[in-house]
Image 1: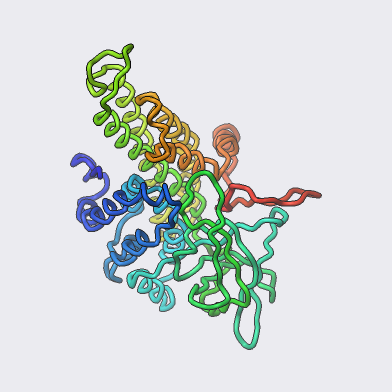
Image 2 (image 1 turned 45 degrees about the vertical axis):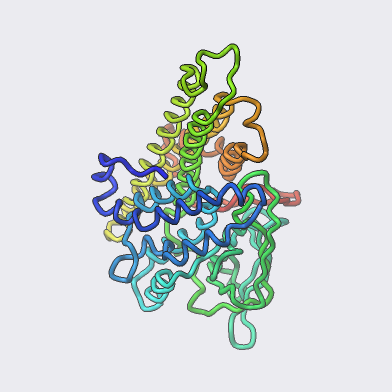
Length: 420
């Protein structure tokens, strides 16, 4: 596994290496078993359990509550290292860290502290937002009162990580007043079921299948108005995609170098008696490395804008907070437009460095392109580019929340987009 260069410590903070050192042995263990999971389409339950036992989900929790107190750039740098090991595992914890971020932005009251302690204890949170067969702007899942308590009924798709989780970060509408809410639903009850029915060609072991809620009990204190959700949430979700892509690019560089180093067969049209000494092949691997470097640099640069948004939230300066949220959204979008193309190019160049044997399914080298293509498809790049352009030309504030669903007079079907 790669580590961060010494010159980067001042950027990420002197404690980054100390935090990372705790988790790198686990990341290596995950990397060592990633190919087996890919070949067998085996969910990463063991990998997730290793992370839970190490309390990785509490990386962002302040030290005074038992966490690592990581900044957002530090968190996302760690996630790049995790995504290099296995991008499926990195994406599987996306919903968890988004919910953690929301609780970190909430007032530090007794109930928030309860959640921080849950994270430190190893509790993991999954995601359940997207629905199919729903009109855009609507949500079918309902939170309603029953027998003196509250229950959730509905079905979600792309429930990333939920199959591994103790809690679900669920988007719904409250029957009593029509308000959109987030419900934190415990998975340890018969009213919550999950299916591993995600059929995408990439990111196949993220647990991103269907989750169903039938009178699933939720405590009233765990129902939060969606309007109070942390303001830079969309940027945060997109940063997760950026660092997952950057981790994939690092994995491509690693595998390209290893495959070339170990390759025995050569072409008569080549330039050396060993592929590792062929200057053209060296150039290709060098180009892959440069693409990965650029992807990571862009992704980490964008995380500092999100950190400024978090800091501004606590400043009491509304104008500063608004500007910071705009910058967080724009920088994550700018990164997405560019990084997606860089990583897709790197994962294709991998095959230019190798022969036809690289297409062997036993090596599963195609997983890098498939995973990158899937991650890059979640949020249409063309719309992100348009939003950036509209800001620069007309000063139009970017949207902080977007949704997907059927247009007027149409029927919704499953799509790769996710709200947030």
